[in-house]
Image (cartoon, rainbow, N blue to C red; front, top):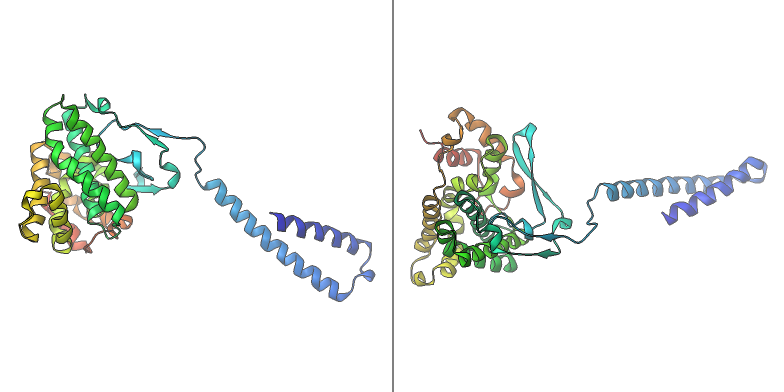
Length: 317
């Protein structure tokens, strides 16, 4: 704004000179004044744009502390927020670094009394964060570390956390795994599992973790040929006893473990249980294909027909 003030001051000085009589102002001075006026308007436009940006950009005003009450979203570690878009019957993400908390408290007592169904849904959501981020195009060494460690914690503890409400060690490990998944999201990003789940939550109000669980294994099976090396690396961390197995066997092991976890935690796997009908398929394909923020992270490009085939696997006749 300093440049603008200086030029406006000069303008006022010149205006007074002109008001006193043009006979004292040469043609060269008028040209110079015209140039200064143009420059002043340019600075004004820039200042207005900057002021508008400052007004609409979210800024953190106070220190924030996050205490998760589920073992799933990982939002206590991310710069993301998900909002429903009713007119589109879908969901979209908002990303802003101001949403990253200053402090996080992971207290297993906060999830001790959670219903089993919420342990299951949020736990599988956290597992999806870890596996998707590890197999994302945007994966980094930092996100890889947190994704692998988070996946290991969740694979090893979700069944016990689901079956035994008093197993506080398992629940503490689930909280930490979910937190690690959130860190991985911030450094990498989820992929087609989350992308295709958003229309399920937006239109049919299926819980986010449940919609991810329904699609999880099917998307990873579709992706396998493009990311089997990464899935095998994940297997080496999660189940080191399989180190001598082939890449294909280890990749398949991870996908089978995902399927088994969804099964033993009793998460429904048929969209028809939630009122989704075969005639809704075109809507799902169209809405899912628009989630480009996440689809661009997927190791394997999805055509409209690919998306259709994945939804058909969970729309059982």
